[in-house]
Length: 461
Ligand code: TYD
Ligand code: MG
Image (cartoon, rainbow, N blue to C red; front, side):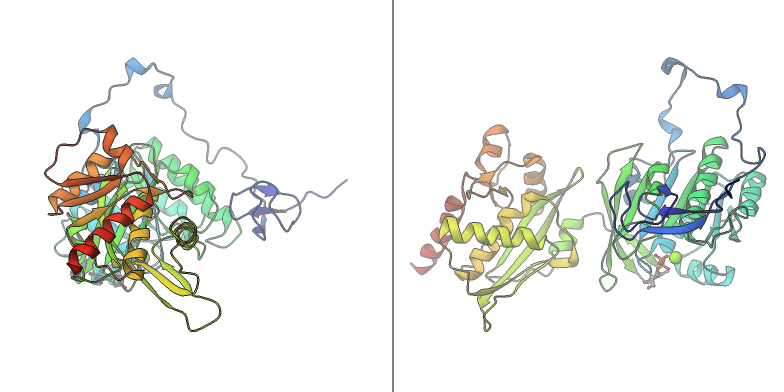
């Protein structure tokens, strides 16, 4: 009789299970991600979900949804990323690099919530004294917050069932372990089991659970991708560790729109909300310097003004250097190729550096026009007016293409005192935008650069 196998291979990216090791995961095609782990067979009904008569199927009409179902976390930026507050019985994953401020943020949320909700904070990473030291920096806490230092899931489940809190924070999922599984905490099967236990608890009690998850070097939550599939909401806390600002980004949200962001600043008393991020990001802009352009991008439903800087200078080497910080390196190369081919800008023997001031990461194509104008402004040494804001996608033929949300972008720029805006002509024609700003619609890069040259000749006169 064939011996029953006691181990299997799991993909740490997608969570797929295979009988033998392979260099590439057949399911998600990631390389070198299969790890050997014991197969656990749970006997009996120890973990059978509670199936009671109240859990019978119902029609949509029978379900009543009240607005007050959500409750506020006491931090407006946090609520906004969640889609308007915490949903009872939801499971939220908060990911981020080590030391970015996940524990701080969640302890602050606990502080606010504990004023009128029962909250349990479970830490598998820090001792009670360490948490108290952090709490002292954050201010006064109400009595409704209980702390527990525990990594055993059965114990944690027991305490949650006994205490019946409304909100539970698990810091972090990688430190939790289930006794039935023999692999070490943080391994694929442990993380998956821990998440499954918490999911069942969240839905059956109900209790809102926040899980802290560490992020790997590649930028995904350590452990299997299935974690992201299991939870209701995935939030990422991003930012440069050496920079004070932090962005909380919604990546997945079953209760609201994704890509919403909340902006915070790390201070000595924890994370402070930044209600007007554009103003914050633009502070310290240089005056009258070439190569600096303000762009308006959209982060979710929120327009955000950022400064793009470019430095173009003659190279001292055979191979020109290109560097991009905060924007896609390949996009910068592509846009410079467009400039060379369509406008005859000879940047082939120049080093080029493009940077987004403030350390933000820009992914939206609407920043293309900003990158192009910053490069041209530096190359031709034409400073752009500080009251100018631009947005638009640039195509390979040098055309400026429309982007969504033009009205919102213009409104935000006007609010911050900008007076001129260069935008795609098609976006200008499509919308009726009432504004006091001077709107310059351009259909191609030639027109946009023409504006720069007009500025130069006006200056020389
Ligand atoms: P932490 O929340 O421990 O990070 P994570 O849980 O994501 O690993 O954040 C730790 C960092 O935050 C640490 O470098 C110190 C800084 N910090 C402040 O600057 N001010 C504060 O009030 C607190 C509590 C932390
Ligand atoms: Mg922590």
